[in-house]
Image (tube, helix red, strand yellow):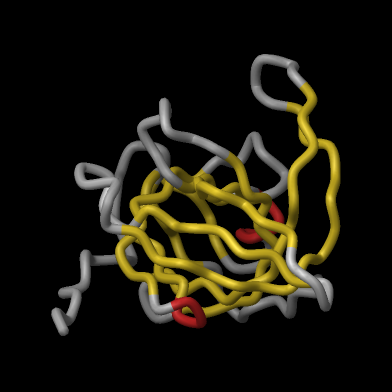
Length: 151
């Protein structure tokens, strides 16, 4: 994915709230992970569909895993990812738009089970490049938790 540099980079904290507007998902608490090249999202029940699509569930509320959102997205590829412990796994990649504060960008995400982790999403270097600098001493510098409309 080609990124176009912004005039001035924004400073973000080591964690921020991320929205996935194309999927109608708000307030995912994400860890900004400059050690990871790609971004990862915790999903469940991945199913390969026809027409180069994939379906999965995004857990909307970490304390209530029954609150989930089904997503159908185009498969970009399946590739190997090496974890911080050195383990290699095959993961599906999809593309979507992210929003951090008032900044939006299309990124590639790999889909993984992160149920034992503190953060459902890791935002890697390729999602940050040309736009952000990370202040490791602070959190939520450009994002505030947005109210979720109840229907």
